[in-house]
Length: 297
Length: 301
Image (cartoon, rainbow over all chains, first blue to last red; front, side, top):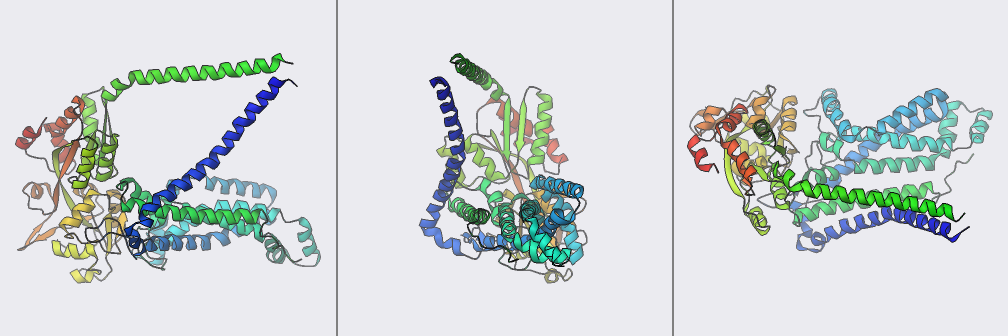
């Protein structure tokens, strides 16, 4: 080989290395920037305003930037979403992996992946037009804009992520497990619930966590259907305001460099940290760092 | 063996070079044509209340001046002012005066925007058509929007909790309500903050116990909400109509403004169009009150 071709190789590997580092550098810069912008409020005298139980950024009386109602809103909507999405998604994944015929599961998978590609504004719009009146009528409420509707919409949006990953986990269970269980006289359903799902539990947990990350970060759809009232509540029928919706609707209008601006960055940093930790745990689980959770067959 | 990579390399170089050259020449092109294209572009940004009005104004203006492009964006008065400071818009549509703080910011950036009243707007208080309430005083409204009255029975209109819809805090309409109706108190804790006039009209039309406020232009366009007349001190009940607005008897009205930041001819020409007979006619068509022609003539640039 000539030295020239080696040089060409070297140049190309350098270019690719730079490309690969770009994303890492971007992530690092995002973290740096977001956290730096929180400092003026966290280290300043206004830090107590963050502890208030109200989020009232524009007020002639007393401005306060209590994070609690918004954290509460995000928490409530996320909980509802995961409670709704997880059972449905796991059962769907099980059906696709074990019960459906090959052709059937192919079609199902294609449709579920299609669901993942619908833009969230469109999902939110459909939620607003169909789900909001439906929730209002079925539960006899005054208004359909509440945490429950938001949770249902988000659960639907997280389903493709959870289904796809859970199905992979289920398929990865060695077929010996299934055959052994059936040979011992267990029925198909017993085998699924007592052997296969426990065997895949690690992957399913990771799937659930990644779905959770998706739910926490979702913005447009919740902004449209949750009613956006920053209330401290645990009732699913109350309107709530999530962290993401607050950032989205207020960031464009805020005075740059003011307390409100930095308070929004505190929200952003909080959201970033939580989703980062969730994703990290999911990656560790997938990577087998928290091992030892295999079924005891 | 030696030639092959050299060939590849030079091919690559050539391609790279051609890309660089073409992009440079493209840049040159766009730099060259830029001043001219900017001269024919007009960017209006600001009040969400005024978006429809300004879009129609822009459309009609463009019909007369075929070579001009006018873009209109909403987002709230404040975002309009912010983009004026950033230099990304030429005219701010504002449903409130700029604050001292904002004025200082614009001055700091070397701008001295000129204020122009182009029409008047009423704030309509809207309720669901099935709401039995006939009218309300400003005190009643203050109580409702600040959350001190939480049930319709406090106003003798059924027995249901009141659902309050408000605009987001960035909206000029929000500021107006806060100062004129709430007397600088805060909105109630249960108030729901919506990002547009339309979403408030939408929600109020669907929910029996809802109340909200929107620009009259938006309320008028919808048949599915009821404008609540306002009871003024003695026993007078006043609906938001063009006549009541013109005479100044309807209490919730405000000026719609343009803040103009540059001395460009095009900006002046567009502003004059808004003040012209045709511009004012447009305002009336969309439920706003025209300013009287004398004032308009004085204001024209």
